[in-house]
Length: 165
Image (cartoon, rainbow, N blue to C red):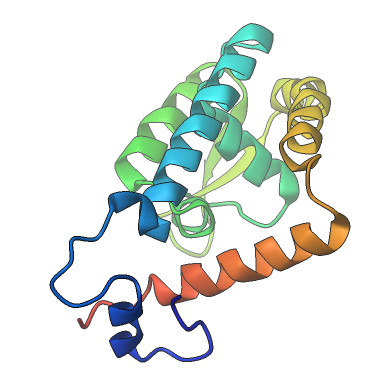
């Protein structure tokens, strides 16, 4: 088993003995990618049933509603989504009257973003559905297990920043 206490990459050798093929299912990254794909498909289907939003548009609206971001740069940093993709979806949300975009008074190269009244109404309408989904997804986990899972995911996310192998 992989040692999670340190970042010594020699621990990778513990996944499979030297010279033996590693089954792809043994990779955490493989499992996480499969789970992410399923969760994204589930969310997209729910959003399609309850709105005309794409998953990226929903994430933009949810992040803007949180009050923790007000620019394209911050949206991309917090979400981990591609800047080009977010920019295209944001342009559509502005055209649809869900998001307001105005020139940043301090940096004229940047736009300040906020939800319009219609955007807030849409958020308020969709949020209970997405909360229900979240409750379903985590329903098989005890509170302590969920807390541990989130801690483990934070550790994996931090490890994903390393590029020097």
